[in-house]
Each structure stands twice: as C-alpha cells, then as structure tokens.
Length: 261
Image 1: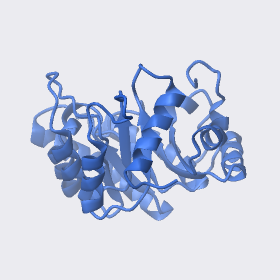
Image 2: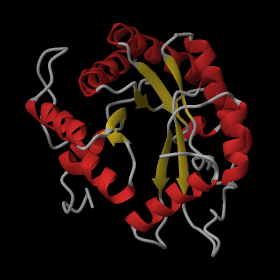
Image 3: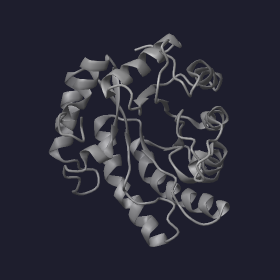
Image 4: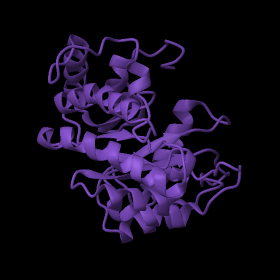
C-alpha cells in the first residue's frame, strides 16, 4: 500500500493502530525516502515533526527505524564506510526525535569471513559512538549475506563491543547465499543474548492459523528463554493473503503464544 501510494507513510502509525490494534510501530526508511532528510546534525525536517504528532495523537509508540540503502557499514573501502556512517546519521536524528530506542542497520561487506567481521565492526563502532549520547542503540538483523548465520552476527556483536549495539533476530531470514536454508531456531538462539528487538516473520498459514515454515511456539520459547521481554514485531511477507489479513494472522498467532497488545 505504501509503495502503491494508497497509504500515506505519515499516516502509518494511525493506520497500524486502527487496522491491526497495535500500540507500537517500526518505520522503514525506504518508505520515507521521497521526503527531505537534510540539514545540520541534530535537526529534523518538518515532516518528522508531523509524523511524531500523528503517532502521539494515535497513541502509538515509535520503536525503531529500519535503515536500508544508506551504504554498507562494512564496506572494504574506508572512505565509503565513513560515508555510510554519515548517511545513517540522519536516521539517528529522526529516531531520537520520534522517541525510538534504536535504528536497525545491515551487516554488509565483502572479503573473507574474518575480514567482513572486522570491517562491519569498525563501521558499527563509529555509528554507535554517534548514537550513544543520543541514548539510541544500533541493532543488526539477519538480513542477507553472512548475516543469515546467527553465529556470525553474534561474532560481529562481540567484536564491535559497544554497549549500545545489539541484534534484531528475524524468524525468517535464514536463506544462505547458496540458496540453502540455515537452521532458523539455532540462528535466533545465537542472536537472542544481544537482542534489542525481535521480528516475527511469517509467509504462509495452515488451516489452523499456524505458520507453515516456522514453529512460533518453539521460536517464542527461545525468545523467552533468553530473558527477552520487549516488543515483538509483526512482519508478514507472504503472497497468499492480503497484507492486512496476513499481518493480522501473524499478530493473532503471536497472541496465541503469549504475546500481548
């Protein structure tokens, strides 16, 4: 709906509240790319003031901004890596103004496994240093490339060694570069000790309303065993149901597994 222009991205918080009954939202940067994001550090454009007003008016808490297309924080070229850090800074300013706790970034790089850990960690440390006085966290998701290996993501977190750096385990993003599927339960378990957010992704449901590829009861057991008691994001990525029906089916499955609105 956002891509088609039938939903104004500034109306997203109120729409999510009204249509799905949720009290918190995650924003995705690409849906706001057509709006200006410039100015000096610490300043935000008027549309972000408008977005905050609409979210507050709907009784919706802004939780995080998922940032895509802002450059690779693990780029092998140090100049490009620094440019990526600077491009993400604008979203930190927006997140701080909206009252979010984090921005989500990607662990993208090239080179050997260890080189990619080092390069990503360097970029993440630079971004975390900017985010820390803003009382924001930087979190990384299993979202393509080596990050589809939860143990690798955990290694990046340990290497980065910043107090405001963590993970966003996604239930569904475990397709490896060679097309094979990694163990989603082991991957989430490896990332959960560092989790600042969780994304409950779904694709398809059976007649009983259960996700056909992910055992949500098992996954939520892993989430709780790690001591996590924060927000769980609802994310439907299927094509058998409408986006609203699929989103609400995912929400309902979470409710049946002990989550609350």
